[in-house]
Image 1 (cartoon, rainbow over the protein chains, first blue to last red):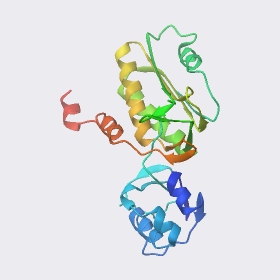
Image 2 (image 1 turned 90 degrees about the vertical axis):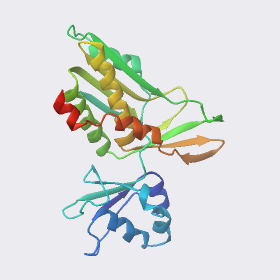
Image 3 (image 1 turned 135 degrees about the vertical axis):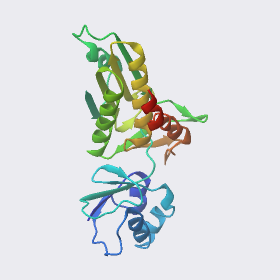
Image 4 (image 1 turned 90 degrees about the horizontal axis):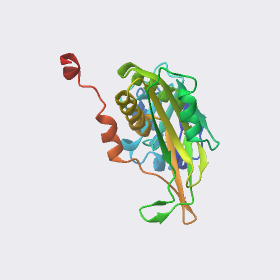
Amino acid sequence: MKILYFAWIRERVGKAEEELSLPATVQTVGDLVQWLKGHGEEYAYAFDNPKVVRAAIDRVHVKPEAKLAGAREIALFPPMTGG
Amino acid sequence: MSVRITDRAFDPAAEAAALSHGRTDIGAVVAFSGICRDSEDGEKIASLTLEHYPGMAEAEIERHVQEAEQRWPLLGVRVVHRVGRIEPGETIVFVACASKHRRAAFEAAEFLMDYLKTHAPFWKKVEAAGQTSWVDAKEKDDEAAARWVRDPKRDAAE
């Protein structure tokens, strides 16, 4: 699955995007963030506080409970500060 | 509707003029410009750098423009958002709404700005005193967006 990172989450992970094979136990956005947290030091740092992580599936905002099944692209990012 | 994301400086006055150019049905244009300040909390700012999620940023703005068009009788909407490095004095975001009468134009412009701040995938990084840091999201921006959420009970009564 294609995962994108933005802003300080991107900087902490050290890459803008990657292709990951997710285990069957990772079913929701919340599961994904928890799983990534245990993926290495840089991920532990990026996802230290899962509460502030926002997500989009196929470019639409979703909540942590959202299911990943059928998604092409998942983006993880901090709260937005545009405008 | 015109939604544009650009990494170049633009002229907000020209954008506003373009919205009503050649039209005689428009009676009101409300244009808002968000400008890069030279200080934040007393600290001098050298620049802002805006990152965005290409594809989603445009789609999210267009979605909110469509919602605005459903809620208010608009005759035109124009949104321009900068990305990349921005220096103090430059316009970061421009939103203009045209309508027959002023009320719809004022309200729709404010609605769009409130949603842009909290829902459009852009992130600001500030460069000050030789260091860069990401701007924190503000709670008052969430509150500003929340006041536009429709109350189904009130809508039914109207």
